[in-house]
Amino acid sequence: MLSKVRDYIKKYKLLDTNELYLVALSGGADSVSLLLLLDEMGYQTHAIHCNFHLRGEESDRDERFCESLCQQKNIPFHRVHFDTLMYAETHKVSVEMAARELRYRYFEQLRNDIGAAGVCVAHHRDDAVETVLLNLVRGTGLRGLTGIQPKNGNILRPLLCLSRKEIEAYLRTKGQEYVTDSTNLEADVQRNVIRLKVLPLLQELNPAVSENIQRTAENLLEAQQVLDAVSNLFDDVKELELNELKKFGSSEYIVYQWAKQYGFNGAQVRQIMEAETGRVFSSPAGYDLLVDRGRLLVEPSLKPMKPLLIPEEGTYVLDHQMRLSVKKEPAWISKDAAIATVDASKVRFPLTVRRVEEGDVMQPFGMEGRKLLSDLMTDRKMTLFEKRRQLVVTDADHQVVWLVGIRTDHRFQVSDTTTEVLSFVPKLV
Image 1 (cartoon, one colour):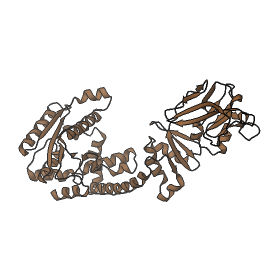
Image 2 (cartoon, one colour):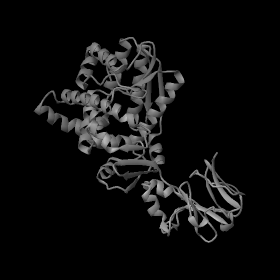
Image 3 (tube, helix red, strand yellow):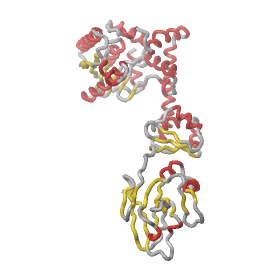
Image 4 (tube, one colour):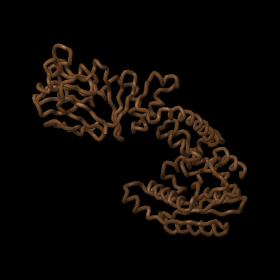
């Protein structure tokens, strides 16, 4: 069994004999085996025990046992006490979640304090199999079927290659005692129902069911890692071309992995894949996703804009990145769409800078008659995101003077008789 664990550690590059590791020690068979195995293999370890004060004297018994074991093995021992029930009540979480949050938060704190490379926890193959079955019953994607991972950040799980029976057999050969948490024997939570009822039934169909499920989970983990490598190509990308994704086989999976980083869930992604052009989806994380002619675009949700009043010449703040200079100058005509020049004598202050509104019209420079700004923007094939961000400058009579960055209104054009222009020059901060 020692060789089996050593090979597993090597396969997943979990531990280094030159580093120090914390071992989460509850006193149960799993954590006791983990501590003894790592010690036997020559790893430098400190034990850490959490007393959650949930089982009265039994909790204190476990603590005493762990302390005694570490004294016998000459392994440094750390302990911490938690008022788990008060934490759960204060933070409005279940007792199980409270214990988890308290435990892992303290693990990381102590790991940093003593300079440990990681925290070893004693999840074994049966735990991983139970997780796969639980996720399958609840409904899950591929990642949920990969079970418990051998490494998750600083949390390391060297015993995932062993079954509970193998662990107990190892302790018997060592003549090593351990304690039993009485709550693990009660089929009152979902995991214990799987452990005490479902798995025994499956083992009647195939005694090797646990090994087979774990092997399948490891195969799926390999597949997941390949898919993650593909999905990582699209990290921080704000636009996806759906046709380009077809070469990867599964567009929806990549879209899900991409959209997930912006807070979108699986149900939304399924709707996104079926949506027509122009539909917008919003995530709780503050992002909007637009379906636009075979593309998916994402950007932060648009915040309301207060119209900016321009009572006279000067430089005005549009946002934290942009300023707008408005001033009168001797006549000249801008050839740059980003800069506007209009006949100053035809413009009446105060001006207003605001976003385009429904029903806005203008007479585009060089055109006869008026046209809706929405139609102008559609003609330019602007996306809905671009349209909703588009700014206009209007005069005191609410006439559109400039569709910012695109074109000026013909009624304010600079002509041969113009002696002075009003220029609009955006400036980056």
